[in-house]
Image: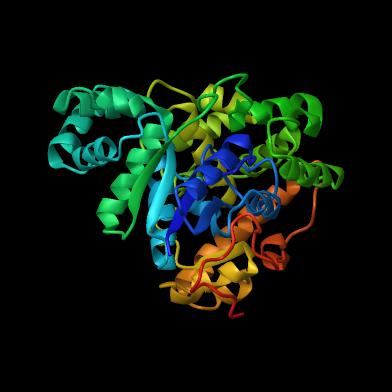
Length: 409
């Protein structure tokens, strides 16, 4: 049996994501497993919709199993995000291929660049670039280009950049995953507008912010849109204003000494954050005020969210210690049978498996409780522990189970 894995945010799940799953089906993959950001996302915020809504949208489009990428790993840099996702899919024990979108759909080129970034010559070149005050992303590309001409241009593509991080994680962890870059179709990452009916997730979020859930119509699969309409009617859409108030209120309660304990805070950055939050009326104003040539918006967004959630340096294991199933077609639960980490549908039970599981579960709950304040209709605490997994009882009739894969539940 061939099993493909995808590491994703699905913020929201849209037509391009459905196309990617369809492409994997056409290539003969029998099952598709999604490792999806849960209550926080890599840009340093919370997703526009709760995890179960996004997970069910993926199932309706042809995915078989959705596991959570816990919040403290989902809101890390591209390197940390990729390492956590690769670790989880590899630990599942059945995934043989990691598929991802890329501007350069050349597996060998991406792997070669990953090896370059893991080498000592690159590390020395990067230190030299950073010492000159170059922002990290530019320093990274320049350091790679100085060693191998063309590598900088490859890393300039946002999907290539993340794809290289996936390849780095596969190599560093010696994961039994074969990278499979899939050419991105339609609008580029972050691009405004749509191309051929495909739009980026960021553009869809902007449309929703302006028009409500109607802004997603025609840009997400019909089944996903129906789920989003129900969620919007229930007040589950994220409110930018509520996020601003929740974030700033928590940050204003922190001293520079407390900020200094947050992961990733160094070089006096705690003082910049503490000064900026004193007057910033919105999260965007906070990032603008604290921004310097060295500290880009993306890093500041993640630092601010980490501070609001009290994610401290060294408090959590390097990789997620459990596999939390958010959604599945019931026959696909058999894929969990060979898992190399504690695996289940109940976060509360997973948290009792070890100290590391308890620590990460607590951090996950903190993100869920924060996210519950940021909805159009704020909700109570404890959702990470009380939510029920989405289980679809029947296999997808479009993709019948192959011999040897039966429901034993």
